[in-house]
Length: 234
Image (cartoon, rainbow, N blue to C red):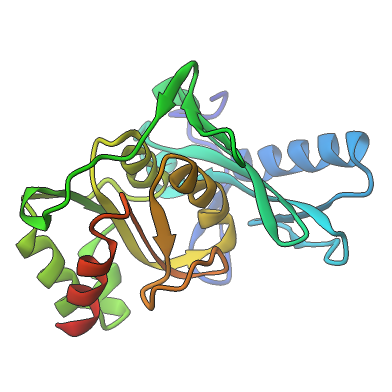
């Protein structure tokens, strides 16, 4: 927040995405804290990669999810933190300081926002559903625009609440689906455990449960198969 809406230093990465001094400072701070308290743990994070790939336990971190929103002064950005042990996600946190929101989940203990337990919705018809996404242009770049159009045209309502917020809204039951075509593991690890602990489902576009990256569909579970069918069958 110290740099938000105050023109932070900005650099361009090789993939042409932006990184700010806040991104790198957050990641270095978290790496330092983890190394000090849990020296045997590994860390996989967006800006400095996976420097300790052999540890059984590792933290998966996105220092600022939605950096472009952060740059433009849009308050919908968050830090994503997940803990993985032996290939199993044990904990996830999404912290959005400008929105004064924080969502968290621990395996087997539910998904929460403060003391409020979160559950996905029970809407079972796509024509009654609200669906979220990042942008149609991303689907067009991935060659999935026809599938995207098939989903949103069949839904009751669609909104481009991209990045972490779409997953958080599905976790809260405020919408039924969030889908994106271009992702990395640090984008998905924390949302996956939150969605599952709230009773929902997160897979790739082939229906495989994964947080390895590529693409993702998160739903309340009831609409998962019908959305996959439209996404892939169009």
